[in-house]
Image (cartoon, rainbow, N blue to C red; front, side, top):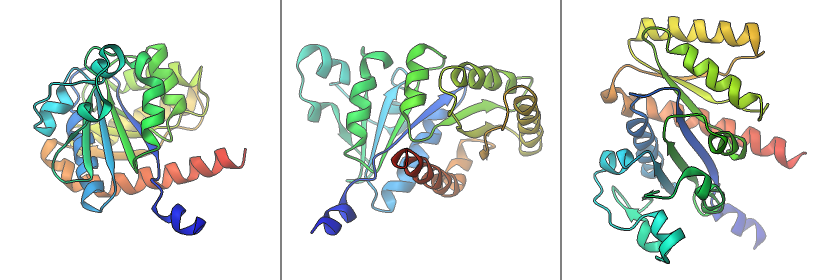
Amino acid sequence: MGNLQNRFAPAGRLVPVFGAHEGLDTSALANGLAKCASRRGETVLMIDICGGDLMREAGIIYNVTLGDVLYRGANIRDAKYVSFNEHYTVACAGDADMEALLGSMAALSLGYDWVFVVCETGCTPAHVRLAAAADTSILAFESCSDQFMRAYWMLDAIRARAPMFDPMMTVFGDEDQGFDSFDLFAATVRDFLGAPPALGALVENRDAVPTIAPALLESLRSETTLNKKRVSQG
């Protein structure tokens, strides 16, 4: 009976999606990953802490938010919106900030195979605590100009407080420029911080998300499995 229960227990993977700067389509990326997982029968919860961008990306009109649950006594079930298929659920933070939601996100992750948290841009103490609590993370940046340095600074700031932070990097932009930009990022990290994170995906445009989502999802799956094993072994 114990083996049967374990077989159907949710995997409980908490995966925040961080953007190193403004203007990144992280909502489209998270939505693509969620759809990919839910098509496979895995349960997914997405949490919008990005001002409603994720809700708009998912095409959901909503009235009740997690802020209503925390501050005004609303039922958590009313803040969860099912869309696309029965395995795909989305909730919006509303007026609850990331700091207030940290405990709730950890608890909610236990009930789903995947919980993707699309975060507002920044690197606050709440971002750091979420990164430290996550099973793995995505850190995205744009390939143009010197935006890779913003990703470097964010990685540096988080690793100073959470040394094990090792996100899957995602680069938005032209393929050739994207690889060059990631190489510059990786070299800078190697010179000053140690081992650079792996490149999880290169996204040329939002239309490419369905194409790259399956491989990125499997990379995240492997990473979360490895990280959970490390934690269990102490």
